[in-house]
Length: 119
Image (cartoon, rainbow, N blue to C red; front, side, top):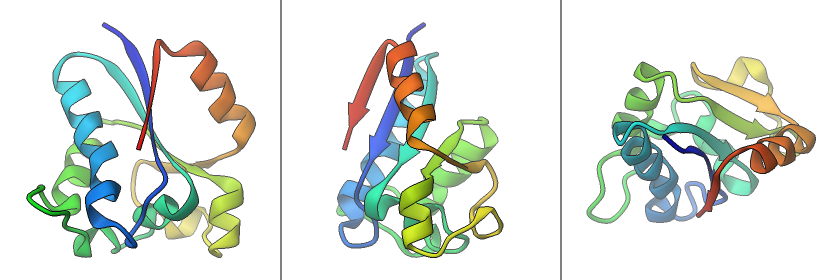
């Protein structure tokens, strides 16, 4: 089993790229790996309540279905604190399973994990 952190930077501005970290997280979890999703830049908006309901990439499953999977499998979703603040998001604004984390926590996780996959 490997440990992975999967980072996404695209949000509703690019539904296909926004969905890929969640697909990679699902595939990783199904393969038995320990995975964390890190959302930064515009991707933090994907953690806002209700947004995933409206994101569907080209020829990809709806983000809302992938989010439900991540929540059911207890895949942590980390939201960049600086990016969230810039978008006026707080802990009360994010979906179940998402927590706002700082850059030091992200860097620590990248160093400790076997792989970092970035979209």
